[in-house]
Length: 193
Image 1 (cartoon, one colour):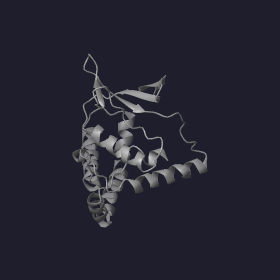
Image 2 (cartoon, helix red, strand yellow):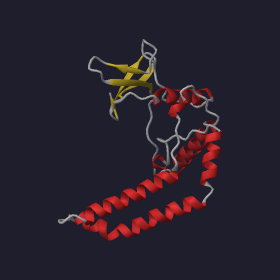
Image 3 (cartoon, one colour):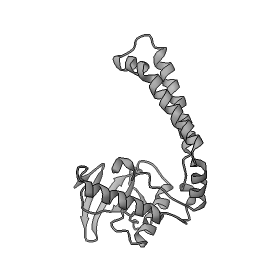
Image 4 (cartoon, helix red, strand yellow):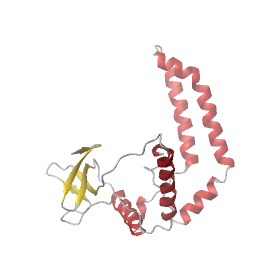
């Protein structure tokens, strides 16, 4: 049956999810290593990748389309109106991140970090660039007029965020996380809670 941009198959080894990858990614090996380490530390229902007959994680079809297969588990998303389910999701997220320290995988070049300060700076510059583009247009849509009217508020928030990050203990926390081999799961974050 169909999943989100995937096909879920019932097999003699349990559910499997098949998904088009779209691009060759060295991250797959690293992700699988981290998932296997979590599985070994008594986390259950981890969607580890399944190797093909050639013992590779990525399979190419006759049209050169790339696919991956993962172990899959029947379930449902949390009920965002159910406080106990939300608290359980937060608890699991915290436990998972506690286990994702001292990660030692062969494919460490895929383990990257994002410097939030550089990211904030980049977004602030992009915001200005968009404002300049919209401001210089002769004919503006209602949305663009609204954007120009609220731009200063967003710019102020962006600059304030960058300033607060600069004054915080962020750089020391980042350095410590890198030194300890900490991995943060980018797909399981506050949007999921």
